[in-house]
Image (cartoon, rainbow, N blue to C red; front, side, top):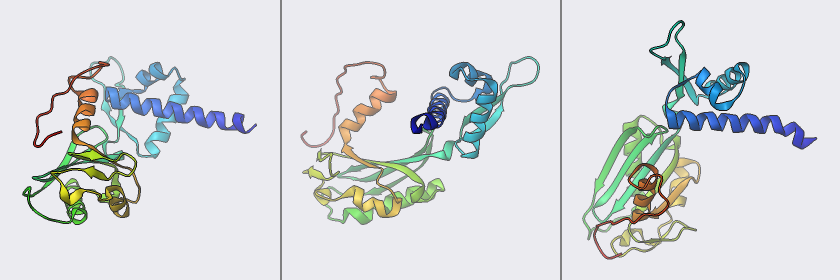
Length: 223
């Protein structure tokens, strides 16, 4: 009985997820287009859209041009329903970019450094993220995920930089634990910078849609 009772809720969640992913991939769509995509009835899609709008995940986005009769209303993702930050750490400083769920850039911030400079990684990391968040008009706790990329070997279990000859100030520093206090969650990914470049190419670059590719990355140091 518990499985049967939970099934409608599960189906609603799956349908909501499918619609959100569709809007993220296709942009603004009409209710009729979402009905055709989901196969749900008009009342079911209307109810689904009301739930997502109440949760501030989607919003009405004008009307579709070029149609006869009454204009069809458009629905789109609420851009700031989720925000993410990408942090690039190099011997020359820290660079942060914040984007909304659609990928639109909201703000950037930089803290320049010299390769030989000695500093505490934690305070500088918080300072540059705070500055970028302020420019984006959001609080740091509103960031749903933070990704930090840096050169060297990263321990994927702990997020520590195990070997980074160019980043002595960051070796062994617990980046996720340091950010949890201000974020209020542990949605922090720490990864080798070139691995992140490869993921970007797979998602939106030259490697999108292919199974095998080679990435050439020219940077400083030996890797």
